[in-house]
Length: 345
Image 1 (cartoon, helix red, strand yellow):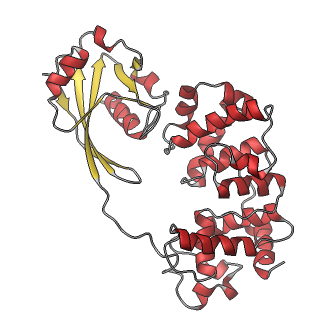
Image 2 (image 1 turned 180 degrees about the vertical axis):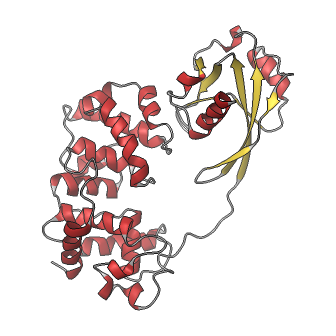
Image 3 (image 1 turned 60 degrees about the horizontal axis):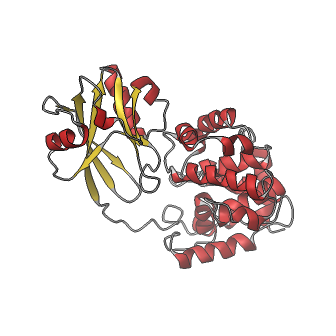
């Protein structure tokens, strides 16, 4: 094996992470953890993971759950398409693989929400198959170790990184090696303030030897995020709030949110025409901004007291919920913060 692999495996056994709740678990738990860890740090994932496996301990339980139940357990974790894909994939596994998580890489890769690196991670960690991974941590390690310049999200640069990832794969101990890559990127070869003095790869890391650790990997080209504006209508009847189910695609797909008004539409007219509600006593709450990957959303919350629940609101896709119950439903983080703020007042 290469010195790279040998040193990394030795380091992982001595200094890597060994107490993560999904380590040593079955394929279902490792798959769940890999999906949750996409775009999300371990410390954030652990409590969500534990709650999720308590409610859905296996594939059959996840497949049998409703989308609302799954999204409610994902609420606050973000990137909700991950949860919807996870749910659909569980149902497909029940149908196509008799409820057993597939062992073959190509079958894993064919599941919704699973890309090349995630499929490889599951194959390596669970089935000890010799597969290379290339998540964000590994891109950073290899960009520094091999001094590969250029934004790692570019196809040309990513192809170079994949080539290196494949070339460095060991012939044995693949699961330990794969976990070692993840651990090294999370613990030592971090985005800022990397601990090069403790790194097992330091002696032949090209970025370290040339004093370019801080410059690699090349940052994403900066661009100005577009900005959007939306008014959240917080229709309240006592402690009950009106929520609407968002379409399955787009931001917060499938989640429950307050009615939203975009642009310059007259709020009073909108409330009367759509809900039969008089909004003349509405109270504006402080505006705030929620940043997505591709744009910023400026949210203007408007508290609209409702003396009775009008008939126009009793439609499919709309529900009145006590605010405490709403906090347990599938709602996005900004809505959760708003409801918590209202409850505290």
